[in-house]
Image (cartoon, rainbow, N blue to C red; front, side):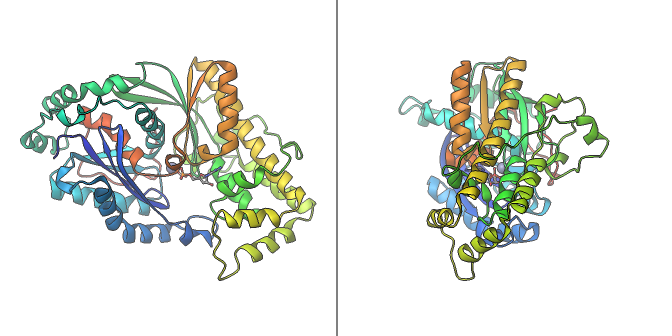
Length: 444
Ligand code: KG4
Ligand code: ZN
């Protein structure tokens, strides 16, 4: 234990094996991400069995690289944080099992983190790094009072008031860096597996979340991936659509989103997907619910009615023929040259409609909850049109909107280590029985 508040984060919930070292939840010392994109690309989506196998291969070198990049040894760590869910069961288990073993071997507390909370903390981490909190030299003087003996006591994985008090006292300076207490913040987590709206509040260093809305079927990122596959682009589809949409007319195809009927979903009339399983939707306001399976079907219909199928097949043959290494950004530029204007218009219209729907519901929720601030995070938050339009609308309404860095929008472990900091201070450690929870819900 270094006494510097160093947490090793481990993330293996989907198709990235990631490890990072974050100091006091506020400064990233290292962030290593081993992507499995090449493994899954040929299938156009994540294959769970392959994901687990790749995590097994990568976990040890990725953790070693994170420690080396941070310039620290295992003995310098103060805790280990790991994603407990939601995600793919086999993939999560690799990270959890490894984190448990490492924590036990090093005599360190283990902290279980919800992946969705991690995404929210990616924004907060970016914010604290943008505003350096330590006066020069002060960081090194932190008096870490939790002795090895105290930490050993905490290792019983019970909430330990004595340890908690000492840890809180030691680190109370951190609270200065957090947003004002009880400030209502609306968080939109929009990724390949989730489209969730939360009301987030922070008091005395601890965050609490209330689910306000979510998708009843596909996640927004899933729609990007499926539409990109349908049109013969690469995987993951979001970055391809993002790059190509710039060349099309966003008003060419008028896509519409119907009002969501929550009751129909509860009655089982709308198919449940992986995204829809992560939290119950009873009592949620239909105005803040999303559905992206309809627009995906509308794009499919457009492709069929306008005879664009062969066009997409030809693109796949040119871009992804065996031996062709689809290297971005060259391949995206090549893809553009292989698209007739009608396809570029379709892509631009799709993206414009999805971003418009995310905005409409997010701003409506912020207004109804009195939230002055919106956080947008998750893989889809990397989208350029989304960032530009959310920023413009927030400015128009006098609201604040924040995003993670581009690198931290997609899955990484720094966000997991950052989200663990509050739990570390509170002494909320994981039990020995910690296991993967593929449907872990955030908040209530
Ligand atoms: O957060 P993430 O890495 O993993 C999940 O937790 O799902 O998000 C991955 C998703 C994919 O669906 C990908 O297509 C989408 O984020 N994505 C984007 C962009 N970059 C990644 N979607 C739209 N525009 C982008 N630039
Ligand atoms: Zn994610």
